[in-house]
Structure formats: structure tokens, C-alpha cells
Length: 110
Image (cartoon, rainbow, N blue to C red):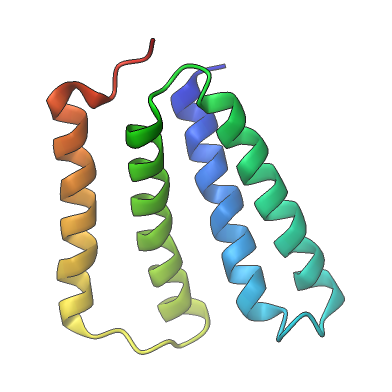
């Protein structure tokens, strides 16, 4: 399976884990608490497989950048977190940084 597809799945798993962490209300709700553990476990397992072929720096930059952006959007959409317009600029800069890193040749598999 493509390491980029696995990276996408790892990002989704991590975002599910992070959103569930918020929904768990301090691990007092069992279903979101279970999703935290499963989401993070899946994300780290997938990352361990991805790192067999993709470079660490690029993988982590994409994972953390896209995950941060998605988590912020989910927080704003589902949890009504405050979202200042300047935050959109920050998210755009994160995404731009990931794109620049890829254009610089960091995205080539071994």
C-alpha cells in the first residue's frame, strides 16, 4: 500500500483520537475514551510502517501540519471552539510549509 495513503490514514486516526480526547470529558465517557486509545494506537502503528519508506522529517511535518489544521477545523465546527481569523492564516502557513517541504525534494521515498 502507498505510504502516502497510509499517512492519510494515520492523520485521520490521530484526528479522531484528538477529537475524541475532547469528547471524553477527562476520560469520564467510555466510548470517546476508547476512541482516543484506538485512534492514537492506529496512528502510531501506521506511522511506524510509513517510516520504513518515507523520511522522518517530511512524514512528521505532513502528519503534524495536516493533523493540526484538521483538528482546529473540527474543534471550531463540532466543539464551537473560538477561531480567530488570524488562525486561518496560521493554518495556511502550515499547509504552505508542507508544500514547500515537498517541493524541496523531501517527499521522495527511499
